[in-house]
Length: 388
Image (cartoon, rainbow, N blue to C red; front, top):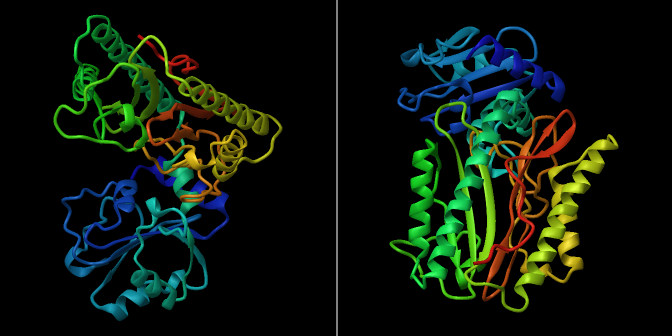
C-alpha cells in the first residue's frame, strides 16, 4: 500500500466519522481486503490476520507467529500472537471504539466478514459498523485518470456495437443465416483487437431469449428470425490494473420495422431512462443528496405509471469501477437496497429494462459525476430502435 492510498483510506474514515477501518482475512475468504491491501492470492493465509487502520496515526498489524511476515509490506506496527488469548489481547487497543468492517445487511457484494470473526471482535470490546461507505469512497469512485479509462472503454464498446449491427444488417439484406453465437464471437474478436478484457462474454439474445436479462447459451446459440428483437449487452475494460469498465446495452430489430407493441415499449423505456437522468442532474444541481435507492424508486414509479410494473425484473443500475459490478453506489431500492449517496467520482449504469413472455428490452448508459454534475460516457445514447 502506498502512502497515498493510506492517506485516502484515512480521509474516508474521517469523513465517515468513525475510529477506523478493520481489515481481516483467513484463507483469503475476504477478497476485498486482499484487493485493497494488495495481498496476492498465492500468499499463504492459514491463520487469521487483522490490519486496523485508524482515522489518524499508524495502522496496527496483528499476525500469527508462523506467518509473521504476511503483512510486512504494509505500513504500521506489528503484534504477533500465538494463541486465541494473545489475539484478543492484541485487539485491546481497539476496545470501546467504532470500526468499519466488511459486512452489510443489504449489500452482499461487500459482506465478507464471517459471523464468527465478528463475534470475536465484539467480544474484544470493538463496536462494528458496515464499511459500505468507506468502500465506496476508497474503491467505488473514480479520479480523473479513472474517468479517462472508463471513457475509452465506453468509446470502444460503442464502436463494437456499430460493427456488430452492420453484420446484422448485412445478414438480413443478403438473406444470410446469422446466429447469436456468431455475433458474440465477432464482439469478442473486437475486444481482443482493442486489448479489452471482460469477466464474461457479451450477451446476445434474440426473440424470446431477449426476455431473459441474463440469457446465456452454449455453442452457436439461436439464429435470428425476421422481426425478432435483438438485445446486446457488453461490458469490458482496458487490460491492466488501472482499467475501468464500461457497460452498455442496445436493442435492434432483425428487420425493417418492429412489430406492434415493441416500438411503444422501447419509446417508453427511453423516456424513463432520460427522465431519471434529468432527475439526478436536477437534484445534484439543487444541492440535494441523491441515493441509489432514490434513483431506483424514481425509475420504478415511472415504469409503473406507464403500466409496466409486472415487467420489471431488476434494479436500475450498478456501480462501475475496476469491476463491472463495482463497489460504488447501486441504483437499487428493492433487490439490495442501497442508501449510499451518489458522490463526486461515482460511476454507475442506468439500465431500466422491461421483460415480457415473448421479448424484452433494456437500454443502458453509463453515468459518472464530475464537478458535481452527471456526464454520460461514450458516444450518443440510443434513442431509436436499430433496424435493418
